Length: 468
Ligand SMILES: Cc1cc2nc3c(=O)[nH]c(=O)nc-3n(C[C@H](O)[C@H](O)[C@H](O)COP(=O)(O)OP(=O)(O)OC[C@H]3O[C@@H](n4cnc5c(N)ncnc54)[C@H](O)[C@@H]3O)c2cc1C
Figure 1: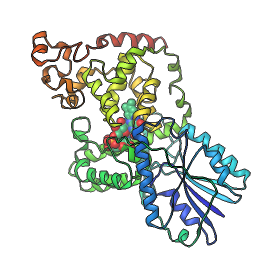
Figure 2: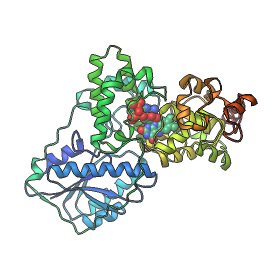
Figure 3: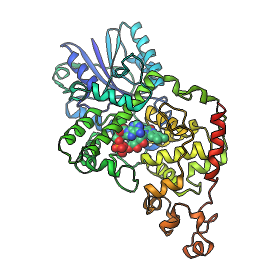
Figure 4: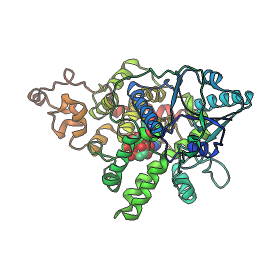
């Protein structure tokens, strides 16, 4: 039999569930292959920084396998075509489950093809603590509100969800590698570094440092973007260079020793938000194309290209929004508070379709994760499950004053405001002319005037949402 491990998201060779099953099932006389497939589909929503990060992860994975005497084969092309080239009958292909609706279609087609070749696709969940569809209400229905979902998770979670999966490479070492005639192609490379480096070594460094210095202050610092208060592990969690179980174990360890356990519990909550959005994608795949609350597909959003461009470029005249958008462009990552502020501003103040914002984030984030991105956007636009009610609209000035009181975060990304004092940094349009002249920041010349009036946002939102 030919056994193929098809790496997709979990790009590591330790604590890897599907890899463990693959390694355990190899028998003497089998041939094996470690495979990764790059194709246009993979790159549909890939910004350059994300491609760079992924390539670093793949280089690292290649090296990890090489250290054990194995190769990672990277093929380029349509998934089905790659399998048509390499599959002989009596093969087993092992994969980690991807719950993203577009991946499900791909996997179904692959499984259908494999069946025609007397072969099989073996799928196992490895990106989340819980299996897809495992956390259900007592009546068997899926949760659509976070808090009861979280409580159920807390009730269900046990060692089997977070214990380490040890991967023993002894069996393939005594077997032969499967040789194919397909041509490998690993050329698509970019060199645009984002805020974080790819690969397991880098991911583990971040986890260790957060465990040492961050997790015990997480609840206190996590909302202040000028502080380095969050783990920044999201790209590693997405690509699985660090496993979700490793993160959970780190948190469990700290729960035992931390003086203030709530600091740690808040971080666990965030890991469970991720589980929650995966659960939503699994049960409600139609969110790929529209609102979770379907009646909100009828909202007549604006598609004003000029305003959308100003938002994308960080030129709205709202410093906190502009700082967030510029961080996204520069680093391929944005602090969670800023994701909420910028998304809420696009949907509520500019009244622009959240799907445009979702796509723009998807094209720029290194950590793009369909479920969390869609969930975050629908939360902000009030079209989602457990979303902000539509009448609750973030006031960007107040958000700014509360979470970046001195304007340190703003000044990092909007340098033209570096001399503006805290009194005006949140709303520079209040600066009298003489202060503008003194500071050399003339509004409308050096920094834009606000593109819309925040005070008017509510009327439009109330009218549109109420009409449905
Ligand atoms: C509009 C919008 C879009 C978003 N898009 C993405 C995305 O594409 N990919 C992504 O991973 N997260 C997304 N998030 C969630 C969140 O902003 C990021 O996970 C977080 O900022 C990552 O930083 P961190 O690793 O330092 O997180 P930490 O605060 O250290 O949290 C640890 C981990 O928990 C998970 N997590 C934290 N907050 C959330 C959340 N609100 N929802 C789901 N998971 C969470 C992430 O995996 C994160 O790495 C989005 C949020 C919003 C409001």
